[in-house]
Length: 576
Image 1: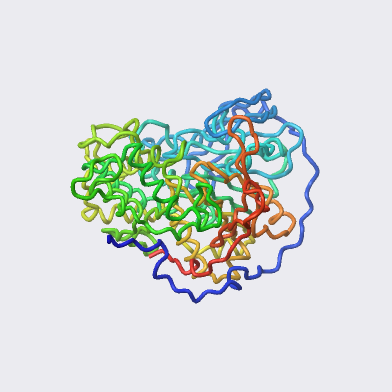
Image 2: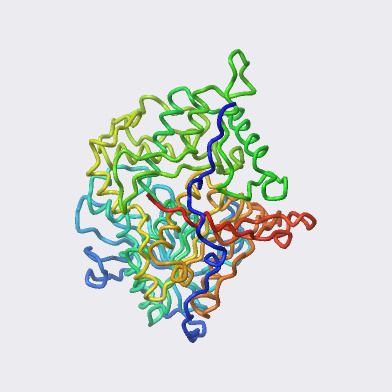
């Protein structure tokens, strides 16, 4: 019999107790006075405004406001992620750029949305997505309406009175020349967050006559990485942070992804039939472990990788089994692996994606992110390095190797040997990777962090967040961690807040920061239609490492039919 691989957390110590999971928090601050809604003093007059370099906390040549205009209400419309299914109110739209010191670095383009009559005195910055290049809060962009992971039927931050703002990450989309500028790379890593924030706060003060009482940050995916970097690098600038599906180990995961790409390009590609075989095997092995056969592996991070059981026996016809190369590709994605060079904060291995379930799901699962619809090219054609129909994160890995590490536009990432580039990789890792577990400065200033990571995320695996969280606990202790951080895992949800993973994180953050109310241990996660907001399902988003177990009798589509079951042994996971 072919041996079954152990679950992701195998070997972790089991000394933690359920009491540690539910450890109490530090005393809460007094509830501040929330100001009455404030009307905008000026909008169009902001055009042409300049923000001096001295008002921005990192080196720039200042910022300029290109346009400022009263934008009309935007009627609801459909998009791929349900970001604009509600009206977006009329607002003052301010757009401009932060000017670089290095003439070779692109400016940081930004957009600020200012409520006309109901400013609540607060500001909310949004992180970007993918490899950046899109002004995330500009009209038509993702965060011009809803901010992840909020439910699609909850009024948008701008509707609630927030001044919202974000940038393009400091470079244009579809271009790689910026990677040759050290300033542009520092901007992309995290400096644009500070530069954009300081500029936006100067504009907000000019528009309303006062600065915000609180500044929050929310980001998903690459923007989730940015959210954690905001708390790690600029803790004094943010009162609260929401990080959804953060790509925490930015360089380790993308070098790991490139090794998966090697397997897929070298005969191990999995077509839709093969992916379905893997997904069916996962469901057969682990679906019922949470008490309900519903296609969701809710008891996350405990499902063993038994893909080897699918390997074709000698003489077995294809169609109902996997080749050896395909099994190797699955294992390359799921299993942990030592990394050939060191990364920031002592990281020397990547935990793998583990067994998530929903591998064959529509939207954002294996056919879109880690596998794709066609095998990667070998060699990769010169240029940008993005191949249509290939796994999106495979393209990301190839881009980072070609343009940010090797910096040669025709470099083929197949079989990439990281060792000759160890110094450059460590330099980039220190800039980009959000693996720093020391949040003591953020905690000391009273900052609060809500981390939401769906269990079936096959773009930014939950294993990253689980190990990082364990390292935070190891550094700060459970009680101190509980005093400033909540980590929720919507079961079965995917990247881009797919499945039952829409959580009203902004309301929880407001309650925690503004009113001193502790977030619940099991907020409700929703699956609402991305086309019409219809109710599909709700489940509890349990605090890590608990999982939702079906009670055996209630409506399986209602969160009230599940109980969060603690698993303190998973708390022992650490980055290493």
